[in-house]
Length: 71
Image (cartoon, rainbow, N blue to C red; front, side, top):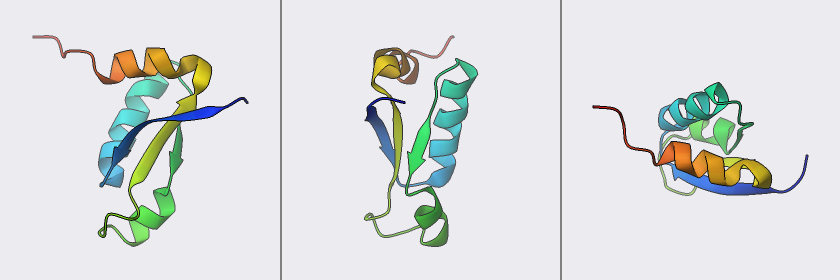
């Protein structure tokens, strides 16, 4: 699989799922850390959901993540 890199971190699992869906729709493999922990204990700051993608797809993922929405 290769090395995974963190591209984003969210307090809410729902926000992470939105980004995950967006990246996967572009063909990027996405991995969530703390997904289960955050759904069980949704507050506290120590259990943020971390989005990771393969290193070779990270630049494209960042471009998608920070692109301007169409007007």
